[in-house]
Length: 381
Image 1 (cartoon, helix red, strand yellow):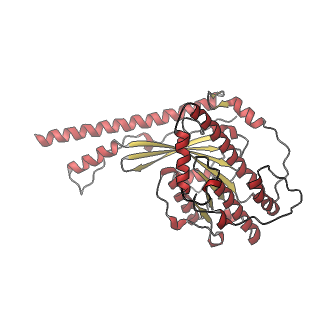
Image 2 (cartoon, rainbow, N blue to C red):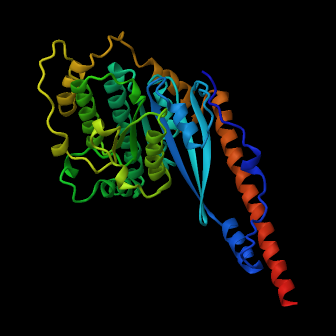
């Protein structure tokens, strides 16, 4: 299996920063401002990005990290790691991006991020490809149900140790939806923030009825799981900026501008934050008698899967065993660590990068504190 790659820290990430001098302020104001910055609190957030092959997951990460390059990102090989920082007053927010390659085939590696220790810091992005509608439904429901199962397993272990984290996470999810939302009791809340991203919307063909079925189906599934939904294109800056706004809200807690909410795809894209939709607004699924429909066993979702499959007949795929999950489980046990040295090396490198950053910040803090003390001594004498 290919090693999960982490980019080497750049000079800007680890270099000591010089004190910032504002000519409009006096010595004491400058010292106070710099010492306050140096003593900032660090907040870590993990972002797991999964979904269809070739759907634009790497482009999404690149955009969030501020890359302006127009070159296509290199294909992801397994579970790749990168991180970005955001300064907000006296808080340094670090987002750890984990991008999973190969569609659903290496799904067990997602347990590296969805771990009991970090689960309360995770945001999941499920990226779908509007250029491959025949596999969209299966990809989306696969990941939602896999995440749900993983959360249930983690929560069971936590509750056995009398942890209050599961209840707090579920309560947080209910608050995001709205305690007075009329559909709250019917939703399948996991406790985890999930953003469903249908990318490459420019690939959609102009078929009004099919497109309407697609949008209503996506809205229904997203609403059932208490997830946010956006149908977008990275190639259109206006749409890309909406995606950044939604992700900044979920990852960094930046207030979301409600004016960006878009419920009508025909007016340009679709952006539905969690809790802003309802079953009454979505409507009921169109009755269908499509021949050969294969129910999934989930009666509620199958009501929408039937018209979706009629509009976008699923690909005929050879029967597959669960060898992928079993194989990956041999390579990595989320509770014991990696069996493959390359994966262990990646995780070690991540820890070393963060430790290097923390030491750099600590040294900077000490230097500025010393500067403040010297300035005080000088002023007194």
